Length: 208
Image 1 (cartoon, rainbow, N blue to C red):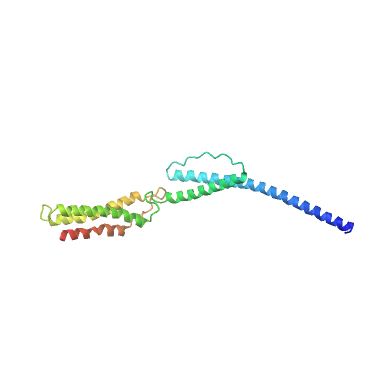
Image 2 (cartoon, helix red, strand yellow):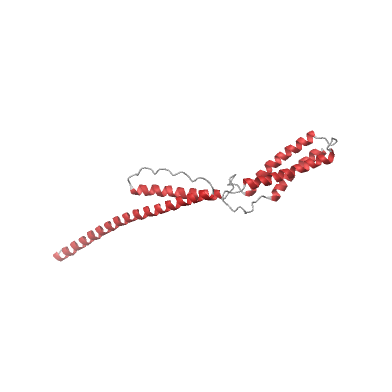
């Protein structure tokens, strides 16, 4: 190898070493800048989430959650940021869940309206059946009330059960957050069918 070739090889090695040093310095600067940017971003997101939680609690007319003391630093900034991102993701998920539940009825919030209303009407219909059976066993058609009085009681019981279910749904199905003038879904036909079906029991017991 000539002296010129050796000189060219030396220049290439020096250029490679300089390029490697520049890349290492740029990578270090990028990591430092990324840590700062991530910290700033997480801080802004945490403040926004905290404000949203307080606003939701105020709108729902409930006490905001208590603030917990931050844990001791781990020492490793990457581990600190990873833990902060995990906590922030969990807080954001719980906030969305709280927003969903705040716009739902406080009683059985995950149920559909027809399922919840069916349970309410069904409970009052069951009570109605019990009342009708008691009346059929204790009140005689040839007694003071007569046939028409007994029939009136048996017919009035389902109507009372329907009205009681209607009013109960109006109280139990009103969400914490929502328009006060919004029309609640009470399933009018479902209530009539469930409560009115008790007349079959009454008629069977009346004519048997």
